[in-house]
Image 1 (cartoon, rainbow, N blue to C red):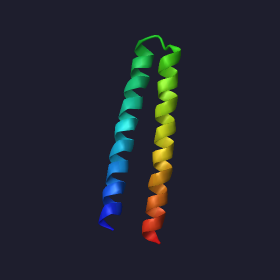
Image 2 (tube, rainbow, N blue to C red; image 1 turned 90 degrees about the vertical axis):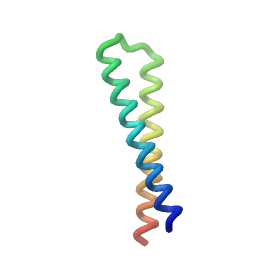
Image 3 (cartoon, one colour; image 1 turned 90 degrees about the horizontal axis):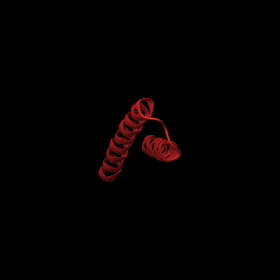
Image 4 (cartoon, rainbow, N blue to C red; image 1 turned 135 degrees about the horizontal axis):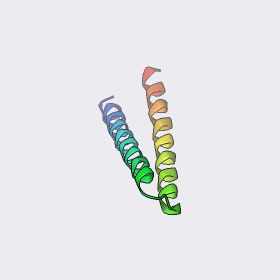
Length: 65
């Protein structure tokens, strides 16, 4: 149980950090002209965020069962 709580805490921290990074990149994209690399980075970060969100919900489902 304690390891699951640690895993959930680390996943939520990683999700928050990724959200902040993507928001900062979006603001930078508004200021600077967006090139292809920035779009790729945003796509990768959003994909990682989605995967982490899925893992987080799966862990919560396992914990409630």
